[in-house]
Amino acid sequence: MATQLLMPKATAVWLVDNTGLTFDQIAAFCGLHPLEVQGIADGDVAGGIKGVNPIQNDQLTKEELEKAEADSTYRMTLSGPKTIVPQAKRRGPRYTPVSKRQEKPNAILWLVRNHPELKDAQLMRLVGTTKPTIESVRERTHWNAANQTPADPVTLGLCTQVELDMEVKKAAKNLPPQEDRAEDSGLLTAEEAMATAQPTPVFDQDFLDAQPSQLTEHEKREEEEYDADSVFSGLTSLKNNRDED
Image (cartoon, rainbow, N blue to C red; front, side, top):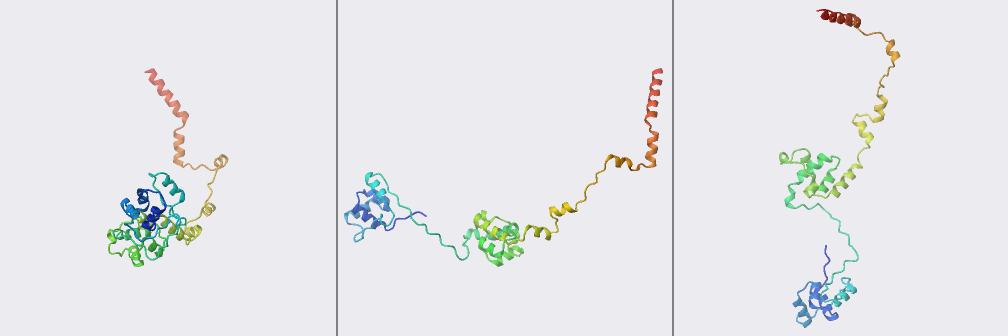
């Protein structure tokens, strides 16, 4: 919020009477028209108004005034407040522009699906809605449920990202520890899975040689029929016959 000059006409009266500033400089500093400042100097304007020293009320520094008196083209600037008053904490329901109120159910649907850990009171703070509306959206009994599409409330401008992150972080504190959630879901932890896993048997060559053959009688007969020496001798005799021909 920009700093505004207090009592501009009273300040102009003081500057006209106590400084060597031009009418244009005083008009620019006080937000008045140069002719109005000239009327103050002539006594036609602001009659009976007591001058106010802007240096005493911390709206102008002495160095700034001296710089303007030395240079007629220089324009003085207001001094900022020395203390910052914190903004009053908002109370009551959040105000939402009329153009965005129809987007509230879409934002509620997005929050219910993406952050089910949020409580109704948190949803009410983020979106500025009521508990019956939240229940109707969650249970899909809202009058416009068929046309609702999830939409990020931050994108819609219903809340800020900082506010959403704070509510999610606050809700996460109430969740059970990670170990408890894994136990409730029936899933095993990494340690339990390693403990119950059956080790893969490893056999050495001596063990394999000591095992009885698992070949069937049919496979044994095939091995005997296709003896390597007999096949090789047969091929040799076939080749000799072809050479003789």
